[in-house]
Length: 242
Ligand SMILES: NC(=O)c1ccc[n+]([C@@H]2O[C@H](COP(=O)([O-])OP(=O)(O)OC[C@H]3O[C@@H](n4cnc5c(N)ncnc54)[C@H](OP(=O)(O)O)[C@@H]3O)[C@@H](O)[C@H]2O)c1
Image 1: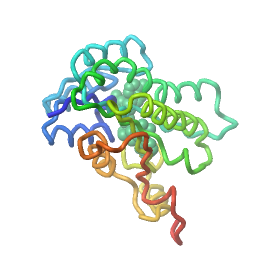
Image 2: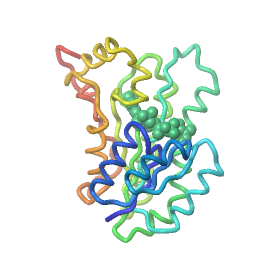
Image 3: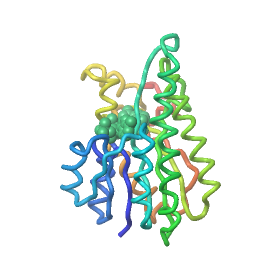
Image 4: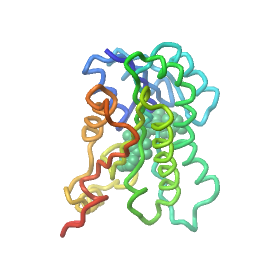
């Protein structure tokens, strides 16, 4: 049995990862922005719940209590999708998106390092990028910049911490999650976006959690420094469909 921390552990990908890892018998610490939000899921899964806003440095420092014991892995699932035409983006848009998606990940990893380094079997960190880093999309400048920084973080830390700590990211296309539904809200829009993918559907949290579990556990023990596209083929393929 291993011990994992999931930041953004309630709703969307974080919750799917939590359910999958708990189902495999692992010990979990789940964070949500509010204790009330994350506690019911944590109670259901027998996990520890913590309130954490990654924009709050004092909150991040409190994670040092989690790192006082060996920690086999981190899933940093906190994120945003801020889509705006470039001429409407203001400095705070860029900075807020960067803080939640990239800088927050770096700060959380820094605080957790003692626990990750102490895991006798080694540890694994899983971050999230986006298809919009490798494939250009209009209105994605702020999120693509921030998630591009996540890719740089993955590669740097994977080199710095090999072989003890593996660091990887998943780069999804649009997922059917609370966050994804802010982009493709109506069934018609969701169908239109789904049909842009060579495999014509939106991603599910299950698609991501299956790969996430592999990357976190022994099955992925020779994988580090990678950014794995889970995107219905959209980042790499040109087909009659998309
Ligand atoms: N959904 C997509 O289509 C898509 C596509 C590409 C990449 N991604 C990336 O995949 C990851 C998971 O996304 P998802 O679809 O599962 O999103 P989600 O369903 O909205 O969940 C996002 C999580 O981020 C947390 N969060 C947001 N701001 C936070 C903050 N300031 N401090 C702490 N936690 C914060 C939320 O916590 P609360 O519930 O407490 O608010 C929530 O648990 C994210 O990094 C996202 O950028 C998603």
